[in-house]
Image (cartoon, rainbow, N blue to C red; front, side, top):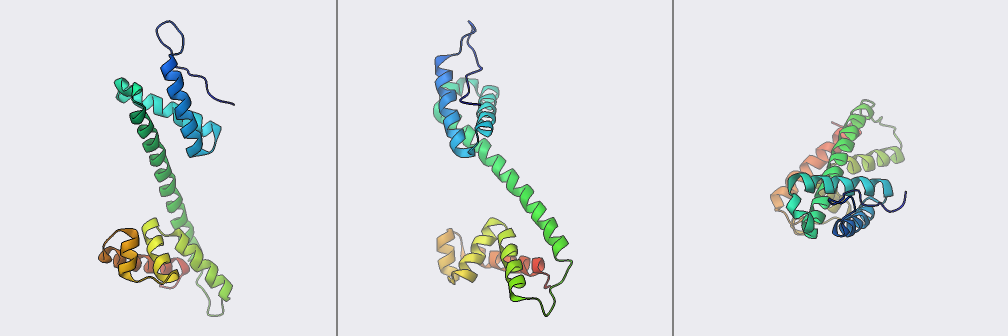
Length: 170
């Protein structure tokens, strides 16, 4: 597909040189974010459309436009993450309908626990890994994650409960 050509035009039907430069810079940043030319084209177009519809006077302000692009990309990533977590929860519910037998192999148990930990929400995942794998104390985890010890304890409780539920041990 190649690099995009500016679609926005000035009054005489020619592309604005400033808009062309801005679009090129945005596209380069979008390509670095998305890793795909098609997705970079879409993100650049969405960014320009958003800025033009909300604050057309800010089109010349590169920082505002770039910040808008990053926020749009982050919103999309969060949305994808929420969808993935919903799908993971549904899959976990289906997978845990089969209980672990007493004679389940260690590899099977290990795989289920690893999958369960990876399926946790990011904060719970981080706390579980830092506590259960790295062996850090509550104060150390609070320092690493820049949160309170109470938050660490709550997230660890939720993580352990989620892991038990996902591997089928209630």
